[in-house]
Amino acid sequence: MKAIEIRNKYLKFFQKHGHVVIPSAPLIPENDPSVLFTTAGMQPLVPYLLGETHPSGIRLTDYQKCVRTNDIEEVGDNRHLTYFEMLGNWSLGDYFKEESVQMSFDFLTQELNIPVEKLSVTCFAGDEDCERDNVTAECWKKAGIPEERIYFFGKDDNWWIAGEEGPCGPDTEMFYDTGKPKCSEECNPSCGCGKYVEIWNNVFMEFFKDKEGKYTKLKQHNVDTGLGLERMAMLLQGKETPFETELFAPIMDKLAELQKVDNIASRRIVTEHLRSSMMITCDGGRPSNVDRGYILRRLIRRMIRHMNKLQISLDELSTLIDINVENLKEMYPALETNKETIKTVILEEKDKFVKTLTKGEKEFVKEMETVKSEGKDTIPGTMVFRLYDTYGFPPEVTEELATENGMKIDKEEFEKLFKEHQ
Ligand SMILES: [Zn+2]
Image (cartoon, rainbow, N blue to C red; front, side, top):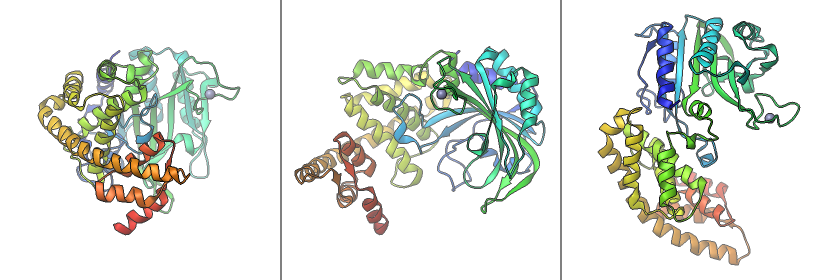
């Protein structure tokens, strides 16, 4: 089942259950300077979770484009993505645990045809802020999940809040059993070994956490759910990583064809960052030295560094953008409408970076040789700062270059100099 079929089935299913389909909010939040990007499906809906009336009603469903870059360095492994799509259904003071659990169960088993034996669920174990969620566990039993596959965990696993304060609550999470053997006797859905993959998270949002960490009940109980599209597509297609699904495969294959040096991590980084930077640019983002512009710049520059690592000519970037537009335009028609702008922005940034790289890398190599000849393995913060200040060389790139050469950078000293400079 292709990602777009999963998305369409999802929206149709919840529409059938009385939900109104609302459009995805843009990746760049319209009236919220506190966050750089939309990072979760609930973010654009916060005012309505707090009690404001939503013009489309109290049952909503959508797909939401999201960008999260706190794990950017992890991209290249078999699962991390900076851009992803969340499918969500919302109850704004309407249905609660029972109906939410039943709909999730029916969607997974009847629409996606996932065998019940493949599913495990987790519920909130309870603490001084909120009681143990036996109600949800009973709902799962009633729906058809046997007791031995219903687990209870604390706030680390089964509590959801975006950031430090805001609407929040206990959640119940659904896990797909990949069929891999248990890593130990205690292996369970909270284990990171890869046997269990989280597929859906239903948050029963009935609390508000304030800055002091105090919880109060919201005016209304809400349900906020999130199902990661890329991961679901991967599981339903029996793939080991999202990069093998139709969302990424055309670029992965093209890179394999063009590369002169084989490196799967670099192919994933280029593929992932290309999609991510195209989506951000499409929603109006532009590279710059601050805030979200800096993140976009970093994505594009990291992609280019890894194209260099694969020894792929940067002239191919234009073709890669064409392939991605062709592949993703059914899901995101705006990519086609804005294709020329996206291309201009990304290619201009590439040209700027090529100039920076050439100068900076020369300087880096000189400095590295000096440090090495002194028998040390740490590039001093002063040098990292000089590369940044004089050559516009991003500290992350210096760090990556250092790592590749078996060295470190003095980050602390750099941060100190950077702060002074600011
Ligand atoms: Zn395990």
